[in-house]
Image (cartoon, rainbow, N blue to C red; front, side, top):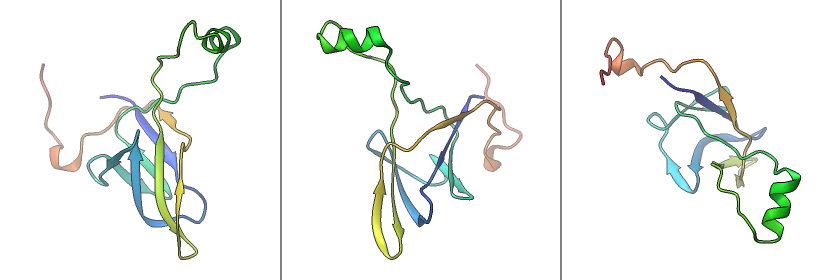
Amino acid sequence: MGKRSLVEVPPGAEPPYLVFVNGVRQAEGSDYRVKDRKLLFDRELVQEGRLGFWRWTLMFFSIAGTYRRDDSVDVKYRRDGRERVATGLDIVTLEEPVAPPADRAGERDFA
């Protein structure tokens, strides 16, 4: 079991949604689920936080880069009859464990 991630779609967004994580298209049902204008991923997605003063300074002078994980969620949707794209949506990490999918209920993975 791991952490889950939640992404809220923009207000007024109408399904169907085309969802991309780091530029890779995701499939509804296997990669994420939709519930009440929220996309629920059964895996942890991470956004890099703000850069501190020293990290920014080192990057500015090309001394060091930033190599932290930085997932990006983009959604293509319709609103008012027009296609729109929202990029870099906020990601919320949920701490509770993930329940197994309905088709695997009662199964266990053993190492």
